[in-house]
Length: 152
Image (tube, rainbow, N blue to C red):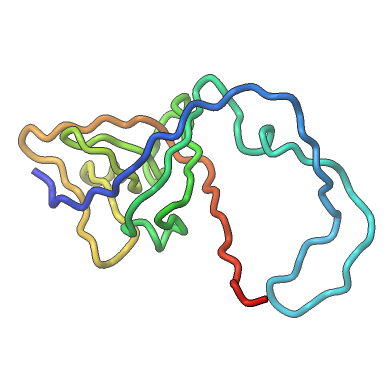
């Protein structure tokens, strides 16, 4: 049995192939440290479908509820883009079903099979006896809406 640290996941839907929406991608990077001078020209265009969804027929979206993955940058209300066609490997963040309940965790294959939370307040899910684990896909991207101040 496992220790019951399952995050709730809300299934949003399967991705569809849509027409391209190319938006400008500026050549200069934005500094997250000291400010740097901005460049005023576009390097290329960027289609978010092309960037985030490699295999539309194998991709689905889920919304996260819970905080067991905050140290991996996954927060409650984030939308995860999950690819079912990617073979899960050690260290991947996966959407899994454990004994009938969905969760998102880091997959640990060595030395023992475990699902690892990325929040020290939670314990790993170990698999002993007849616990059931089914991997639904590998998380490839996280979408988060930034909260804006209500100050005018």
